[in-house]
Image 1 (cartoon, rainbow, N blue to C red):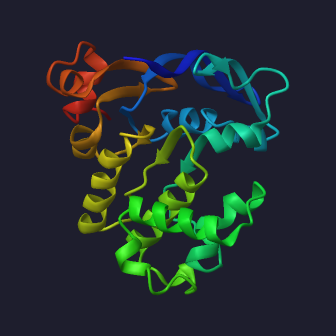
Image 2 (cartoon, rainbow, N blue to C red):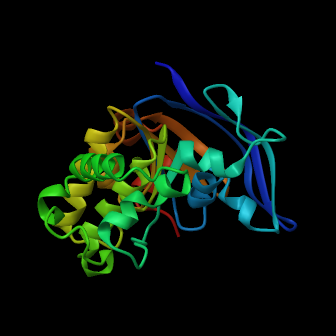
Length: 251
């Protein structure tokens, strides 16, 4: 199984506080990897490090490497904007722009210099179909994206992320604000998308990790305690900390 992303001795500090403490993990291509663990353990921090979002924080200091197809995304001279095109992000709360549905999906393409109307329409239609949203919005593409339901907004944000054809899709608790029906649609979508993308998801929902993830990493206080195929980690955890967390014995 080919490694798509490799994290090597990754350390991240905010000021003098070390938040990630030497993370090592390999993320296979066209698989879904879930990051689980208690709040504040570094899951979202690790996820954001994977597309250099910490560049936006002057207090953040990163050491170590993250390799995309063997190429260090933190190497000197690497363009963070280009990295984020290759490694897209979907956030916990849907964040549609105050624009039409069409303009939301086409936004990244226009920024990249694509202005051919026919090609934009083709990409918008393809990505909305790919995110299971086309049939619901095809007659309302000029309608404000803010008028969509929460679940529709999240699927639209996924469509917006894949419109620029990234290689990796990062999802930070994408279902935490959604009802069970919308959650099921997003989970179905993730399983479909992994044919074309490598997906890393942060989730507090352990049932969700078991439903969608091929591999799961349990994190605690900025470290990966255990990383294994999902069924193996949940059914036969090797580390006592992992067992205690899965059994609800923390705190």
